[in-house]
Image (cartoon, rainbow, N blue to C red):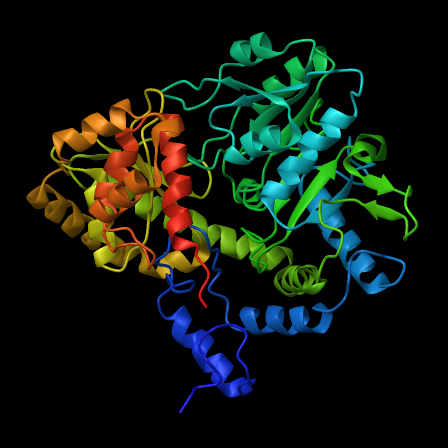
Length: 491
């Protein structure tokens, strides 16, 4: 007898709601845990009882509302304006400040916010045939994506291997007559350190160039940490010369994915962000962001989250997170051979290994085997490979467990020894060019590393070691091909 329901997304005959939900739950069982404080990347969990249910209910109320036309759905416009106002006020803007005219837009995430910041800067200078942006190498990769999409040249600025910050003199030297935007991070995602924003903004202003502060990661954490007494340097609209900022509400505002806010110091700076088109027989298109149709679900969920937690709630969560960061940093310092790559300034713990017998990629696998999911980062331009921990409030109860688990994982990694790839494979990785990759060669590499059309292997140390050995351009192509092997249609 034929199963007319099938296993694909479009069965011949529809199946019951209960069965569909059971199927989704079964698929979700293979995912990393989004709650419980054991995943140090990708998700942001406050550990607040009832918050998920509130956000889901708010999402459902506005899921079918379309942000394409704010005059048709004033509820969404009201919530979006409220979110922008909250972000602006938190980041040094609004009435009674030195930036009283801040305006903004809600986007789908940090990458869209950064692309739009670059677009606004580029389109504000139509006189330039070859616009450029100045970005420290520690700036988020989304700036490189924006430069690629928008055909803007990217001028990277190195960071000091000790401070992990760019030198202001190097930033100033990178500014050219064609520069339309200078970037600073608060903090950088990889290491969690805050760039010298005030000094960078000053050199940008002196050159007559916009300055964007990427606070996607820290914009909703640093202000609360400052209120708790942390020595947070100036980084927001209180700094003269800062012309735009981005902050993700789906990070430390703990809203569901995906909600970010892009802010501009005044309405005139925001105008080039918009896209308007009336030269066709349909409706006149006016979009403040990249998407035209936008579900109101994420905006309503973010609005509900902010309203429910309030300033006192965020201050409590920041205090809990601060203590968790300190506990994790102490746990790293207690393991021989490990050291912090940077003293924590925000909500990131980033560490590396000084012991050549302690392979960080193996350590990450050993932590995964023990239920701790961390984020390995490859070595770059004199900076060692490292392990990144994004710390949220939900991590705090787990800190006492993490120290012993890290020590056990380090001992196991030492016992296993560093990954040793076949010499011929290393030679191949070092000599290949992206253009030389063939489907057969990619398939062979993937098979040898345990990659296929199914889920990625539980242990990724060999994959990371190969990627580390490959030149950057080849590494990028291998990333594309390996992920492409995973993204194949099911019939």
